[in-house]
Image (cartoon, rainbow, N blue to C red; front, side):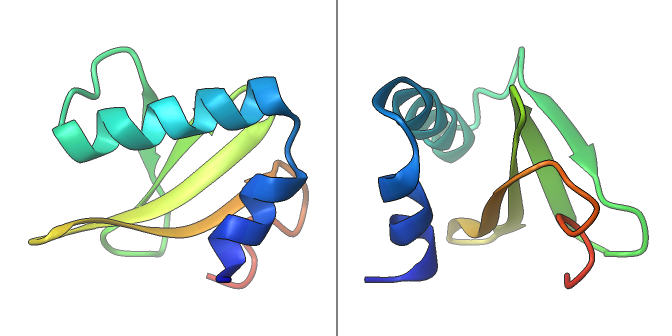
Length: 80
């Protein structure tokens, strides 16, 4: 089980469903209405806000690669 699966498992059902819906939107390219911003100092890495959660991802030629899912804190973007 990878890191993203573990983080999804600890989320409550409602939040997990919202995050999975955002994953689907990102994969399909229908990002209208999503709060997506590039991260400063990290070329090509973006974040999408889902309430208090941040989904950090990178777009590649094969789709998207989820890097991390974390609640916003001082440590959220530190180790990227």
